[in-house]
Image 1 (cartoon, helix red, strand yellow):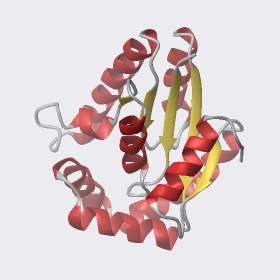
Image 2 (cartoon, helix red, strand yellow):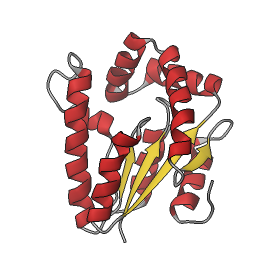
Image 3 (cartoon, rainbow, N blue to C red):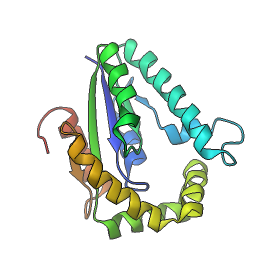
Image 4 (cartoon, rainbow, N blue to C red):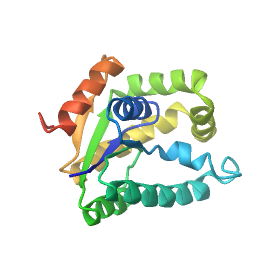
Length: 186
């Protein structure tokens, strides 16, 4: 059964890094990073939030198409509202796929430091999205996201949690794979 693996968590926590590693090590998996999709739409920096909504719809269609081929999708995407993930859950179910949400988390200071580090040296895509986050308040935005995720998590009883503080990307990747394969749970 194909799976839609949703890697959730604050900006800069490692979602895209883990998704890329997962796709590289699992042939046929689509690494569906909405931050990359949004950058494909002209003028996205000027109308980020409107463009991001269009990118989410495109990502949903891409996920459905790929799941229907019988292949997994790994989607690194911040979501702090149930309404933002329900369409992906529904799409997975309608495609005969399993939806698995994994929240990557770390203490606020660690999450803020990771975001700052990525914002200072990320690739063209992350720099553009990080610029938007920085324009909105940078570390203060990451702190708000952290709080929003703490309020969101109790609403998502099926969401599995991977603490990333003090762990290398490889250790985090191993924890994610274990959860995807059903070895352990929250």
